[in-house]
Amino acid sequence: MTTETPIKDENIVWHQHSIDKEFRAKLKQQKPVILWFTGLSGAGKSTVAGALENKLAEQGYHTYLLDGDNVRHGLCSDLGFSEQDRRENIRRIGELAKLMADAGLIVLSAFISPHRAERQLVREMVPEGEFLEVYVNTSLEVCEQRDPKGLYKKARAGEIRNFTGIDSDYEAPINPEIDLLAGEKAIDELVDDCIQILKQRNIIA
Image 1: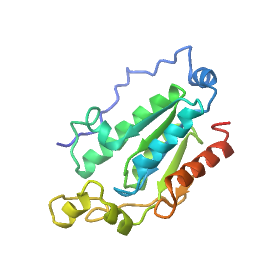
Image 2: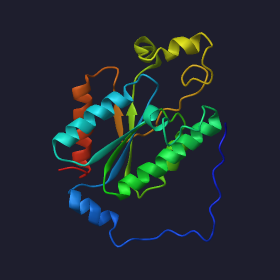
Image 3: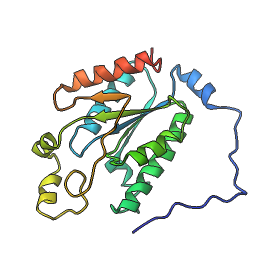
Image 4: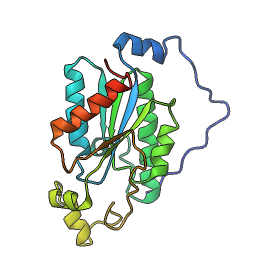
């Protein structure tokens, strides 16, 4: 199945409510942001994002974690894995993350999102500084050794087509806001690296 991006009707306008992002963020005593975790399958995106969310929740921050597999159970259940469907998958997630940021949340999004153009599309949906690209920097060799879902084995055997890193390209971030050496550091160290950058950017206290 393929899905085309809908054309917006000129009669549909955005309604600005009296309770806005600034007010919601003030209530939560935090700065809204989208932390976009990208990396190969098996790199540790969901693991690091989940551990970071736990740390933030312990400190009283309001968060939501969007995970690739979970989203495909509902919001994107009608999409396949063609290039067009994968682009639409990222577009939808970007729009959802934008709404969650508008609600004043710290949004953690863990998706392979292999193409720079798609990640740039999401970046441009929100104000400058509200999108932080988090590169879970793990080599293909390490990801294949981990292979938690057995997907690399299937891809190498030709059972899965268009698998990122094998027969479909992954475009690593050129200048991510956060570069996590996930193949070399422990989870706690990676979380601490994220926390440090969030503090430097005044997203959390």
